[in-house]
Length: 328
Image (cartoon, rainbow, N blue to C red; front, side, top):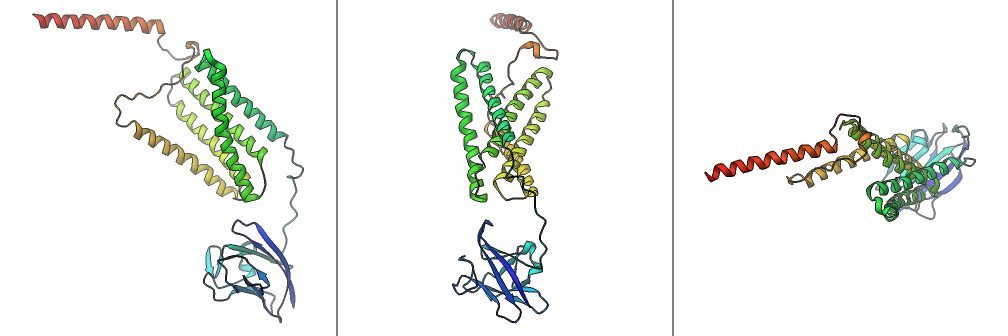
């Protein structure tokens, strides 16, 4: 009894190097796998032996892979084994050295045809999100320049834009190059949409949180803003990982949850250590906004100034009385 077997040789990043369609006979010789040019399936991997393993067909139709007493053996689901059947392989894959072999026979049931949404996918949504995010970032830079330096808005806005463009450009380039290296595809529009959208959401969310704290006088609102910011960064990181790598959803979700939390914790710890021994350090207050935006009972600037002058007069009087008593 003969069977036809399809063997894909993949590199360490699971990119296909070669594909071979071979015949395997129960009464015939096995197929040899290794680095030697005489092998039936050649694996160009320094961690594979010259004759590393062989594929054989048993009388009952079972395809068996057997290690040929090599140093590294066969890696199956993270464990080193010396032999296995094709039915034991998860997704038909076995690791030899740092390479992977993916095998299937004509008896294996194929998954149904997947619907192709990528080829006909419209990128209008990506362009729209990227454009909207970019405009919101530009608007935020101009708004901050107008609030912080009303006398020199163009120069301040240009400086903010250049700094933001450099940071976001480096972040975007990182994910585009990673996608090119792992998936062999440029993903400019999708990564740009995620980067611009997440940046705009994070910037305006931080400003809205600051305004809300000023308006309500509730400092705990800051914690809610920080949590929303972490969620925004996590979602962006999840999308970047899914676009640029071959990691599955659970793995990408773990990265998206862990990395922002670790980053926030590290930043908080370094900030606390930096000012731990400085008794003169005063944490920066929130932004300054029009008094009419505040919705809690506070003190108007005129009343605060009058109270300060009264306090100064009382203090001067007390100092004068103490000097008078000391002179007697």
